[in-house]
Image 1: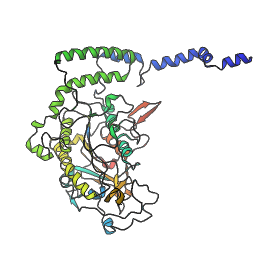
Image 2: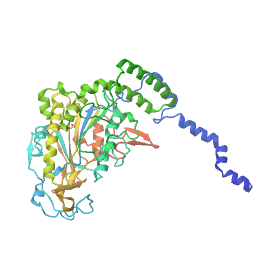
Image 3: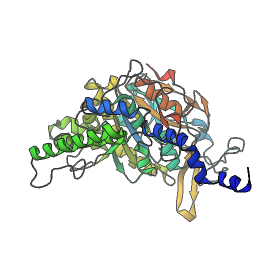
Image 4: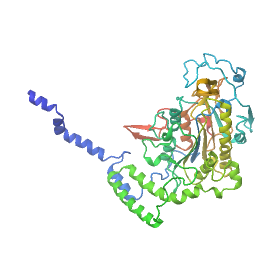
Length: 484
């Protein structure tokens, strides 16, 4: 080969000319396969068969104990040492520096590792036949002590709010992964025909993790959480425009649906199926959402039990709406309540937040139970991590008598849906610093929630970027001691 031919062979134009057949095959293969691995011809067959609804109920991997989930997410991280995990030894050493060997190699967001210890700010008592140990700040939950399982041995990998919130909700500390609710609806669909399968409501101040907490990530967007407002229209702009009646709107949607189904048969893009389902859902919600939000049909006794003031948005109203949502077949409901980040005055902060949330959280469990829904509805309560046994005081920041972030040990509770009621699981050391018995990692909690729903967390996967992903990554074990 002479120099001219050698240089020609090295050019990109020459490469494409001589290798075009091979590249053409690669391109054709990519065009014939959609995001879920189906051929375009198969996608066309499915589209021709009729309307496609990504939320159509699907069978679980095995018989489930729970059919639906309500997750009460206490964003900001409640102090387990002041609410659930009483430590008499901590009280004995109140105000003394923590032993150096306890905090060796530990990282903290704001305080020094050698900060002084601080005992619980409130007294504890034992409640119910189970003898569950609860703070005096939780008098309503104390009445439901025998209906819940308390896990004192939770731990996480993250010690700052945004990554820790995203980690608990998605299994990864980085935005972009599907949330727990999205995975559940992707795996099981929804039993509701006129409401979304995954609904999100919030109260308190803003969330550090933002919308990543209910994202569908790389799953089709049909599975992302749908935020509902607590007052007025659940979703803005869902009402028909002025001058458009139901018949005209129905005819318009039918035409748009036909065009979308035709395009779906050509492209096979699952997002087109999402669009079809979204238009239909929006149409149905014009009547279902106002009925859902209207609490006038609830008895005065029920409103009083939750602590709901009609017409006033609140965490209590959201809990009542969560019950109404699962009654109507919604698969997953996330209630986010932010306000637990007590770097200063942990006693005052807890008094305020428990006053807002304790009654309604307990009422939700008791209301579901009396309606026969608790046995197959899983309720989960907790935040992204715990708080330190050491006191946080910083004059420059105006902080005193608070607690810093603590990922090594914290507490959550669960109720219903196949969970063993009246159970207290796990144990921390005498200072409440490290887990010493029955540790439960975030991935273990996620695996257990899926298990209760009849889903094997190792089999619930989705292919993205060339590999199979799952909620628990390559980790997680079902916590068998939690199961009834």
